[in-house]
Image (cartoon, rainbow, N blue to C red):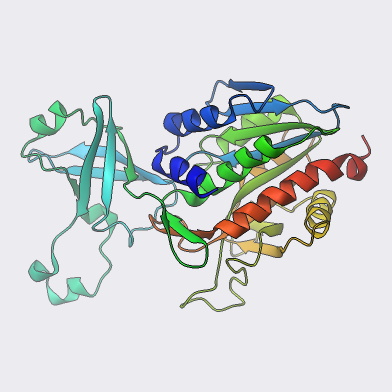
Length: 354
């Protein structure tokens, strides 16, 4: 799992530019699935046909990561950027980034006015992204353009995977390369089953669940399970009731998610799918947590509203510092999520009676 996560984290893919992530996944699953193709939007769809062919189970994990995009190049070669996805300003400053051009990747750093030159009231404020820029070492706009820098180039953080203590790992894009790794391992380990299983690696989740929307319409499965991350609250600055999910205590099975003020715009997990996932965990005494997530949602929200409605649920990986370059997850939680997925496929025919 660690080696697979490292490959996926090192690949780059903001929404609409997931190509390198898709190539890693294709190589990993070659020979492990019966069908594999890319749809018009860029989703990678794989399939294993079951002995009965029913029910059809769709797993979804998104390939894209939050990041930046080149917006403007000034006359001195400094680059202004737009945010793509839910990027918070505070972690951006002083990060190393990669600008992905047709000529290859260029390393730069995110800079701003140093504190020595700030007025006292400026030092007390968080530097906003509008006041930041990227320095790639060029001295003019023409110099930057010769390197291949263009308006619209994708920008990602330059962070690989590093192991911490107690089987924790940190890196960029664990939202949702963790889900991708879990889904890859599920398909690799999946034995002969009655159910037919689709593993869909979706695009553009971070800007509106777009890949899930079109892939669910195409496949029209009997049930769907999204694999994503959720915010752990087991570190300083967070009250336990605000986010009781803890790293290393097992994957979270979602009850509901959505906007913080109302839980609107999100998912109410289908009772049968929720029960299926709980039984799949309890079958082998796999630790799990129940989740009410305020402030976010997943591909399952789009999937459940496809066609006439698709029963959907979510397995979430507890994550610290989400949408930053230093997200943290537990390898044990990821491995336990694979086990729950495998058991869920085996139990699905009995639960859905198809």
